[in-house]
Image (cartoon, rainbow, N blue to C red; front, side, top):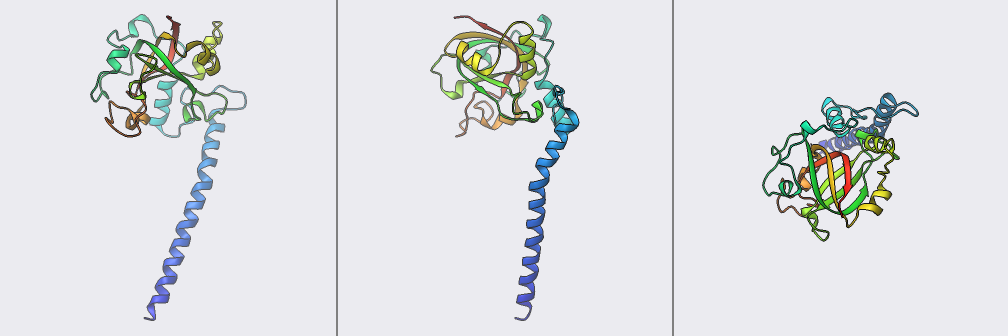
Length: 222
C-alpha cells in the first residue's frame, strides 16, 4: 500500500515530461518550417522547384509539381490520356506515367484556390489554382478530375498576355467546355479521397488522384 503514492508520483512525473515534449514539438515544428522557407527562399526570391520540402522525397514531389516552364513538347504527350480514360474504374496507381503529358476535354464545374503547401514555399500569396473538370456540368464529385495551375505556370502565362489567376479563370471557365494540357502527376496525398484508389469511401470528392499538374494550356471550346 505504501508503494501506491510513490508509483502515482512517478506516473505524474512521466506524464509531465511527455507533455513537455509535446509542447516543445508543437512550438518547434512551425519554427522549423519557417526556417526551411527562409533557407530556400530569400526576400523577393521565387520559390525553387523543390519548394520548402525537408525530405528528398518531398523535394522530388515538389519538382514534379513545378515542371514549368517549359511546357511539354509533342513527343511528351500520351495520346491514350483523355477524360474518359482517367475516369475508367479500377485501381489506377500504375495506369499512367509521370514522365508523360496529357490532354483532356470536359466541363469545368469549379475553380478554387489551393492551400498553403511546401511545393510553393508555404506562401500565402503564391498558391495553385484547382480546376475541377467533369464529363458534364452537373456531374457528381466522384466524376471530377483535377487539373492545377501553379504559380510558375501563372507567371509563364503572364509573359504571354494570359491571366490564369483563380478569379479570372473562375469567371471565364465555369460551366464551359474546355481543353486542358499539362504534365501528368499522381497526387498521392489524395489517393485516399479518390474513387479509383479508395472505391466507395465516404470522403471521396474526386474520381482519381491523377492530375494534369501543372496545366500548360487552356482553351475554351464552347
